[in-house]
Length: 272
Image: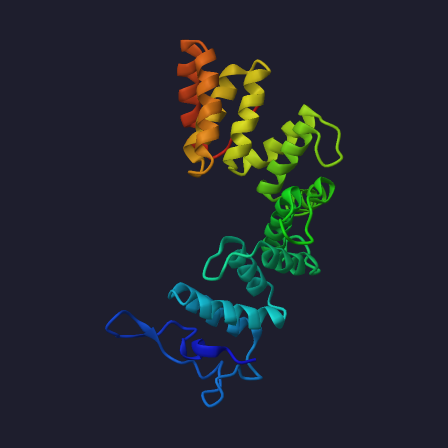
């Protein structure tokens, strides 16, 4: 397989001064200088590292070619990187269906929980669950809540993925994906994800606690979650937290703020 123009980018990131920035030297341990092709004896791991170096140096189109070669040789990390690049349009044109296919290849691998590659499979399962929730317009991938639930459950139960546990909590809260709605079951999944620092799970669990009468604990969890949340999640968490605060008494508010600081300091969200 020819790797086009990126064959002279060094996997080890050796910089060479240039007027517009640093260029990278050719790594002849991975590529044949005369043909510009990957040497037959090069391992997929070496090519994967080459791609990572290219990505870090800003040569994302070239990194994608290296990842593609390594992925074709069974390097699961390279397949995951390609999937993520296509899913977000990072260095390549965004293509959710292409990402879906790469994620599907990953979950078909025989990867045991606890192995070094489990994070790739775990993340791929969550990504596939997300695609199955809504489908991918203009492709054969149609919305399938039951399939989405199965992907999330695999990631949540087998790999203890907090994002998947959060999704399972939402599924049980609403009764989606062929499961019977259960606030108790939802709370258990939210708790598992919250213990791992998942801000969405912390906020949602806090709201459930608030509504069940555990006012201070619920307010504290929502406040801590708002502090930890990514920018994209802050608006809905803030709305939930502010609504709850407006309904609480002054004494409960003060106690909750102090407890939130304690939760943030300990790095957990014990709901007991």
